[in-house]
Length: 268
Image (cartoon, helix red, strand yellow):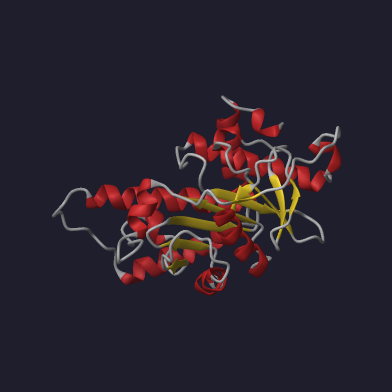
């Protein structure tokens, strides 16, 4: 569970709607990030009001968007996301709730060091944490997990992320990768867009689900594909790991169709 410590300031007093006071580019990112929160709720990846997704605000200012601390994932919409500067200054907080400080530490670290990652998603799911607690980490036992071969970074658990100096170690452990397992803590993915980061997270979550299910058989011996097959899949997966191909858009469009069958409030 994350700390209850938060960064907050009084709600901005204005009669102008959030959509009217931000650029069209920022509003588009807000809508996509809000959709990611609602999709995470739909997939039951939430940990009550804890964990956090963020996205870089387009433009020259080093700002990012993150959830207001206290809202459930299925309450997030484009208008109630909080805009934060890398130094922790709350730029725009429509709800006045502030943000989770641990979320600030983790997300400011990555947004500050990796301008190529426009979105960063972090979960505390049961199977994700279970895999993070295993010495062997993510095992190459399924097509889903093998696709991450050579692409997963690991960061050792240091306690609730409230110490700013942990940011240096977090960034160092991430290196040039965009997928990380936080030991005894959870999963994290970055992407060149919200859509890309979500696709990676969904695949990583699925890989963890499969691993825990396979291990639940107890003494049943797991089958590990030959090294040359793992290498083959790793190379095949590289075509889709950069997030710029049509597959990411198709994946996201299908997710949005699924979401909007029951929930379109995220766009408000």
